[in-house]
Image 1 (cartoon, helix red, strand yellow):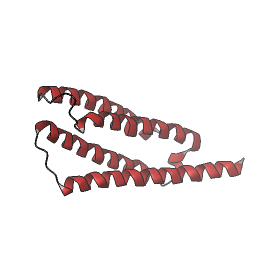
Image 2 (image 1 turned 90 degrees about the vertical axis):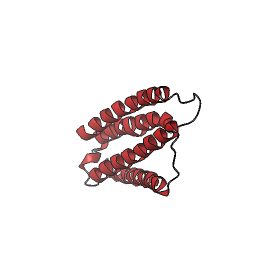
Image 3 (image 1 turned 180 degrees about the vertical axis):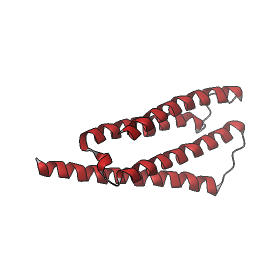
Length: 141
């Protein structure tokens, strides 16, 4: 449970910081207001997929002892790696668009896709762990 709390707190700080970075970086580079950049959504991705998801995982862990399952560690690290990878690529692409140096690269798209695949696999694993715990708890009662 401690790891989920720490992860949640770290993603809160990263999410809030990325919002400040977006605002200040676009102002500093005189980026036209209203023009889209991926920097504008990094803030919400980190807060939602990081901070809120790990708060929910923390509550579920408290109720169902998810972290007692040997697969939980795999979920935790796979999810974190996927989120960091995905949001890092978003930051890279956002900085490129603000600076006007966007490069269409299959490698960047592939890395972003890998991050999303990791997130999807981790969430699927979390559902499996939760399902096992719910069924085990239902059989006991």
